[in-house]
Amino acid sequence: MAAPHPIEKFQQWFAEARAIEPYDPTAMALATASGDGRPAVRMVLLKHADERGFVFYTNLQSPKSIALRANPNASLCFHWPKLERQVRIDGPVVAVDPAEADAYFATRPRLSQLGAWASAQSQPMAGRFELERAVAAAAVRFPIGAVPRPPHWSGWRVEPEAIEFWQARAFRHHDREKITRDRDGWSAKWLFP
Ligand SMILES: Cc1cc2nc3c(=O)[nH]c(=O)nc-3n(C[C@H](O)[C@H](O)[C@H](O)COP(=O)(O)O)c2cc1C
Image (cartoon, rainbow, N blue to C red; front, side, top):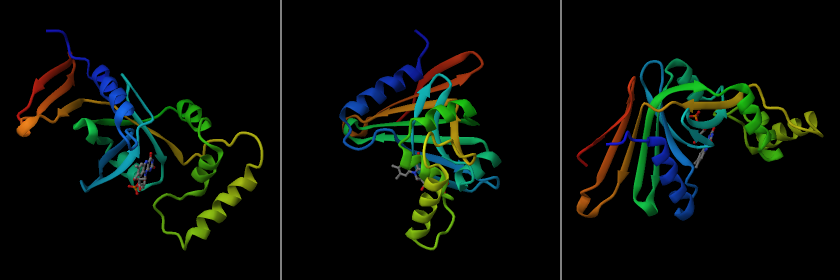
């Protein structure tokens, strides 16, 4: 049997989700655990996926980034309801290279770039005006030309050690293919649903 190619299979499923899902198919749940093992989960957007892993961008001082520095492991979960599919990805995380983060940041709309400067993500704020004032201050700071990437904003890459593809079937006789990586490469097994 040919060796499984989970990244190729992911790209295939992702393309099918992009074609049919009415809501953003790049949305994925990101689970982290703090240094003392407390889990937390929230949605983020997949911005890049290839053999090296699955990339999202965020504030580096946010609770998720603090957790990822203390415990550099993550779990991702996509749900594509129209296709009745779920994909789960587990693995260690590494920081995205600064040049790669700069290149991605440069593609973002200017107001999103200013928002990245303005938002102390997950810190309390007095009200919306505080955010709007911070965005205005960033606009004054960078009135013309390119907005540089803030030092507190970058990406994380989840390097997959296991990818599980779940496809609903009639009567809950679902398909689950779990593809895991070890030193010899990828190997697949089927799991009871
Ligand atoms: C659909 C969706 C996509 C999101 N994408 C991102 C994202 O790509 N990056 C990000 O920092 N927060 C994103 N958020 C907000 C996060 O879910 C979360 O509220 C925020 O990052 C703070 O998380 P933390 O306090 O656990 O660090 C998204 C929220 C939703 C609902």
